[in-house]
Amino acid sequence: MRKHALFIANSLDNAFKFQQVFACLDVRVTAGTTLQIEQLAVRGPAVDLVVFEARGTASAKREEVESLAERRACPLLFIVDEENAEALQFPMRVPADFVMHGASALECELRISRLLGGQIFNELDETITVGSMIINLATYQVTVAGDPVDFTYLEYALLAYLVQHSDRAFSRELLLRNVWGFDYFGGCRTVDVHVRRIRSKLGPDLAQQLETVRGVGYLWRSR
Image 1: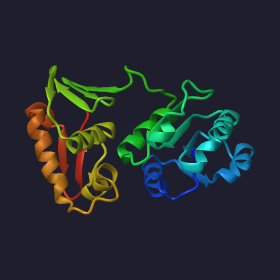
Image 2: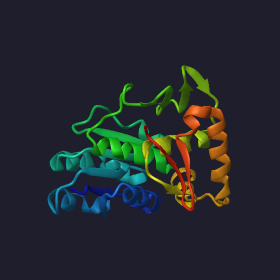
Image 3: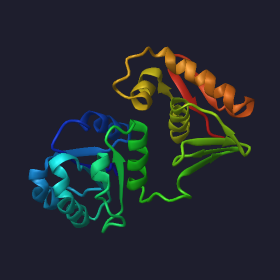
Image 4: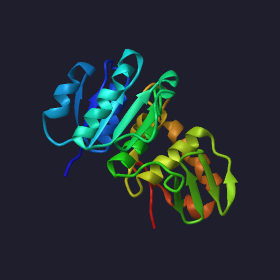
């Protein structure tokens, strides 16, 4: 069954990015402001996730949104500034996590996926193992056969995104939107440059799994 999320925000600062993330995850979205918290708490179809932009004056509504998520029996993701992050206290009455305002689409998608899957972040959940390669999602580090690999952040983010969505082909344009972000104005060929660098750093065995899909873009082939 298709998942359903509530997106509560008093601004449009994060709306476009999260709209694209939800579309990629095939999650239906109902949006509202903090003035509509009570209606959202009791009306409409079942809810699988609440995303709350707890920034500025909206942060004063944190307890009400937490109660909404509790009444809806679903997890909660906060979008916060550095100043608002200090006010969050875990554990909460519902499974919860947060992202910083300005977080990449990749990070937002990862945290939403885990909350929708009933997973809460812990040290064991924050690694992906593919053969001899380990990707640490908490420290943004990659090791191959126990040796650290010196990736730039964007090389790491592109690799992690493709591995998280293995066996699915992505166009260069979609990778630019989901990894580089919507404010990136460079050409699509920058993806090709980063793929070449990733392949050279992974070594020949793992590099074979990062495939070029002719006429489309790239995919990570699972084995």
